[in-house]
Length: 602
Image: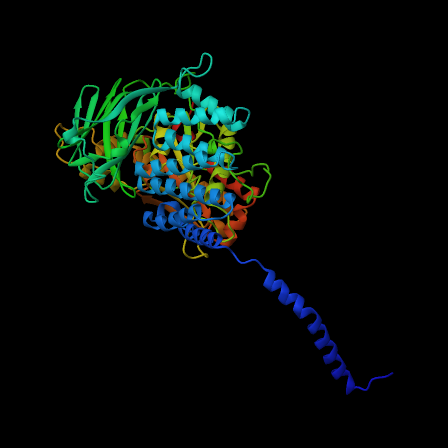
């Protein structure tokens, strides 16, 4: 039968209605059958949102006041009915955030709380898939954040006992051999116990943990030492005044009106074997806290305050002569493995491959009429050791680009390429990374590594960020000369003449001009090298001064290089490619090589 044109629309409508009538119940049934989230799952999702809000900013911009809400949401999950796996994940998130909050505040109490949370999972869920990760986190927090040898040794023993055949278990055994001479056959510990944290008498043993929020307290203490250098970091709840007393090879720092956090009392203090630092005693006295430091030799002592979090940095330099180009002339460097686990940095978001280095030649870059003559006049030393510092790491992602690329991964990849390139170009120069995996390294430790190694250059590699996605270019920073002046003003009431106070120490070394000279060579080479292939990414933003903590106290020419803007979508896409990252590394190499030629090398 042939349908008329008028009848066709009616038939089509009828067919459509019939089809909808047949499928709509099925679609409706599908909606009804979609499982609603349980209360536990809803709270976990809220925790993830709160955590994401914290981590959408760079680590140094995250506010400690934001952590408790996310931590409490995850805590609620651990107390409600639900899958064991979800509760385990919530507990790990809760512990990780507590540990991160401790790093933002410097308060050792939060490290202890994080350890307790990890340990609760170990006790309650011995068959949890997160067991190994929790044990590693406990051991690392004790060793690196708290520098508690006893706690770290016990945690590594537990890890080795539970996972004897695993990579983590074998690494735990290696760490035990380093920390505990009684472990294994013929093991030699690389750690010395050099002191304790004490309170003298019950009448002064009270702590500010119970004295209220207004009291000023020492919340943690850490040390980083080499053969002729030591850095002690005193974490504080608030800024303080301090006094220095020096008597031979003993230096005492007194913090009037300050008290020790209860979590520190009784802690044994340790350092690497054979270091400059021989004894360290932290005492609670009636009128404040005294930190007594004994060293084998003492050329200079200096101290300065840093904020966010508040801490007092103490640098001690011995008089042992520098030995260059001789085996054993520098202390052995054994960088920690990333997170105590195999695998290194996660560079899955970076395109694979390592193309050949582009041919980049960098003649000395212009940096102003006076900079190089001043640097040469102040006596820049030949280069025998270079420390490369890949920015960020671990939970500190740095800037995350609009496409999800993390600054920490870019920095590490470029730093590794730079190391390989410098080794090829400068075969007589030792090249060291402050981190060679995805782990967090504190800013003060990065500088301490360079100082302890008697490095001749320090280069911190970063990727830039801006509120505007249109901003692009490269820039290089050197330490603001006014930073040392503020250090000098921080000390109060010195009981002995401070001929070696911070501003005098760092100014007398003469690294300001040398740092500007290094910055000129590096900045000029970066601009030329990147512009050869990517002119838009090579805008010359110049050499600038800033009071970056990672440059404070460095006893060598030091620069912080912002190689590109990861916040710019075009730059981010370029940074994903091996060719662009290699070009950056090769450009940096050309700049360093140019600088080295002006001062000589081994």
